Image (cartoon, rainbow, N blue to C red):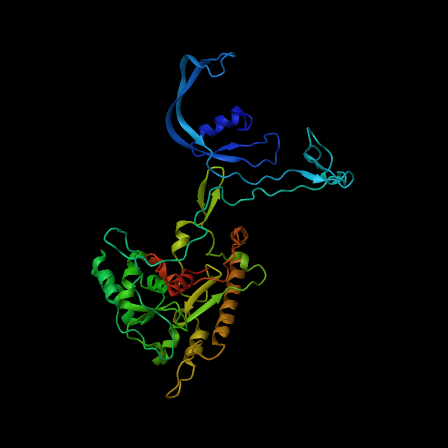
Length: 435
């Protein structure tokens, strides 16, 4: 038992570190053995030494001769987690046709001065991974049953899911825009503990500019209240566009961007840093797993600093290097002379002309031209920074993630739990932040 736990020295080291897990290896002599981890918990108990007398003539006879207290137990380790898969260094040999364990041939004993590349060709390579399972605890939320509508009765009582009472509008050329907030949104604004000054700051911002992204609203107007507070205020002042040229933006109630040609400057441009040379390595990806698990301590380690998670600059100028590879800007927040002149030169539409469902009031491929201009500026800025600070640029690490091509402005981060509707799932996937 002591050998499977690593010996007295390893057990003592584990006891000396409160957060460290106890490792149990069923094959302590094999370096490829994957341990099972035991989590320590404080407890109160006693270690007893009991002497029992038995008789060979009477197998069922038991008599307690003495009981002695050997010590006090203040910490107990329980092996409740799953054990990882095991891979043995066993191979089927071509000469004999039998499965043989080649551990002694693969792992050298004592001092070995021979090169590993000079081993006999009959011995295969054995390179198992560090771990096979990502987690050592049972996940009970992998599958879920179809959602059912709950009906309140007198006998059963449950807490009703908190809802987002905003209006999430789908872009259409014929459907009218919302004129006022829902009754639930107004009631939620009155029931929450929100000062009137915070509401007036947001309302004044929408009077000056009828269309905002949440990120631009917070950064440009220097709003200091929390995202939860903003999530309660916004549905009472503006509605949210799910798709179309103004997707991901909040629009003041009653304002119809389809009828105003000047609304073209509030359209959204998704700017993505292209993979040219090593440019991708200098810009991070925001959407990734925020934590990683340390199996030795069973703790989650954050990969982000606190100041990196919350602040995203919403404007673009001549000296900008985007903080993330995918980021969204409104055209009015792109402070480039060339792009602003291009916006002014867009010809006014004739009477009866309607905006395009995809391009809005801007001509075809206008967004591609803007991306080319911005990408050239980003490349020049990265080259300049790499020449001025070569050590800083070389120390930057790129974190790969499967969600590189997703993301948006993070509008919904201040709201509460999702509603059980498909359209709100679409909003959350769009509105989850820049990548």
